[in-house]
Image (cartoon, rainbow, N blue to C red):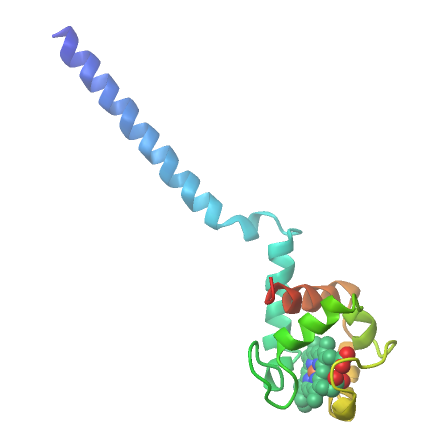
Amino acid sequence: MEKIVVVVVFMVLLSCQNKKQESFGVEKTAVPEVAENSVEAKIKLGESIFNGVGLCHTCHKPDQKVIGPSIKEIATIYKEQNADMVDFLRENAKPIVDPTQYEVMKTNFAVTKSMSDEELQAIELYMHSLIK
Ligand code: HEC
């Protein structure tokens, strides 16, 4: 009889442990929501601006050149030259990727200049996140 009790207790303990692990896994995948200021959350914000209100995605695709250079090309050149994308988007720095097409990009400064530091930094983080 004692043995059965021990076995039952053991099994209950085991099943509790399994549940704990399950819920831990769920919490892990929900991290961006929990840590609002995490890099992941900022990248998500940048991505949503880039593909949403910023309309950047209409000219910039991740991998291939459309109207503008691809996001990866831009991010790679900015990384290599250690350049500041936020400065560029505020019209405080010259174009370094494709200066011959600068006039086309310039039309966006009305939008990007009205964005907050946080939003511009989020866009920069998102663009850089694609080449990591
Ligand atoms: C109408 C098309 C168009 C839209 C919309 C657009 N871009 Fe561009 N973008 C371009 C073109 C063309 C270039 C290449 C010219 C250049 O390098 O300045 C460019 C270049 C860039 C560069 C590289 C600048 C450099 O140093 O040469 C960045 C960064 C950039 N765009 C970010 C953005 C962001 C962020 C948005 C959204 C707010 C956006 N673009 C929306 C067309 C566009």
